[in-house]
Amino acid sequence: MKVLITGAGGQLGRALMARVPEQASVRAMTHEQLDIADARAVEAAFGAFRPDVLINAAGFTRVDDAEKEREAARRANATGAAVLAGACRGASSWLVQVSTDYVFDGAQGRPYTADAAPNPLSVYGLTKLEGEQAVAHALPAHSTVLRTSWVYAPDGRNFLTTMLRLMRARPELQVVSDQVGAPTSVTGLAQVLWALAQRRAAGLYHWCDSGAASWYDFAVAIAEEALALGLLAALPAIVPIASAAYPTAARRPTYSLLDKRATEELLGLSAPHWRRALRETLTARAQAEAAA
Ligand SMILES: NC(=O)c1ccc[n+]([C@@H]2O[C@H](COP(=O)([O-])OP(=O)(O)OC[C@H]3O[C@@H](n4cnc5c(N)ncnc54)[C@H](OP(=O)(O)O)[C@@H]3O)[C@@H](O)[C@H]2O)c1
Image (tube, rainbow, N blue to C red; front, side, top):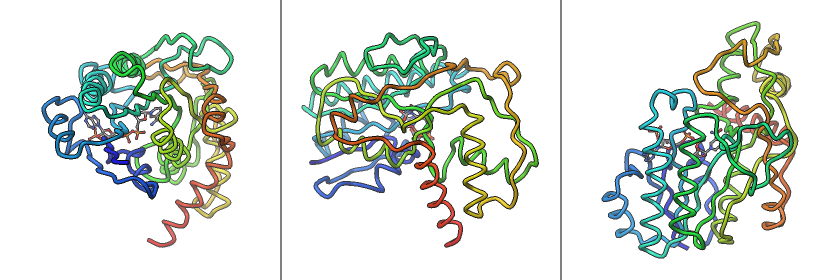
């Protein structure tokens, strides 16, 4: 199986590269190497490699910046997805596209199944939805779209690494407690994407780690686990606040849990509880810091 990975320099791209299955021969292209919205460049990449499967890990992921950089967000998240879908259709390749819980408005109050009606509140969510639609339209029977949520890794730019940095610098932090979702380890997400690339099930699927948390709960757990692993010298005070007290450019759903049971059934696996996955991630981080 020849697999092309786009957006390979991001946190998901790197996690995919860290666990390439034995039977896959991979070409990984970073943003610098391939702009997914550049149709000619994409065509050239396809011509040179002729992938059986493309996993698109590229995206404009700065949710607040997207409100002002609407065109840049649309270019990466919608145009890019459409260009890749067109190239896959021309080359008879399978496309695995990654999307987000932010396609939902969070008003439903219970986990979203893949067939629930989307209603994005932000430019990021809207452009990701446009990307999903472009993929489904071009490749109805030859693509998988996987929505996920609150993705973090031991390094790079994400909530976990931001919290660790702030907790090391400040005695007290305020964290939003009225947005609930599921923190999701990039490690498990990468495994699921590889399984989907091999399984090639067409359609829309959801993946997140099990359980639920507010950003405040997530921050408290990060502090406790990091302290236990020696990544923090002392527990900072963490104060829960309302979203209204921490205005951001983008509106976010208050409750965006994804119902992932169909994916678990399809792949015959069950998602770990987010807190266990967090402990494993921080253990990897502690080992990396000890080795440095
Ligand atoms: N992070 C989350 O919490 C989360 C949650 C749900 C879904 N997702 C989805 O998961 C996927 C992977 O995100 P991630 O967490 O790995 O984010 P990330 O670390 O920001 O990685 C995204 C990568 O895409 C690259 N990129 C941006 N525009 C591109 C373009 N036009 N052509 C090629 N590459 C481009 C970025 O490069 P530059 O840095 O140079 O721009 C970056 O390397 C995205 O589809 C995202 O929407 C993420």
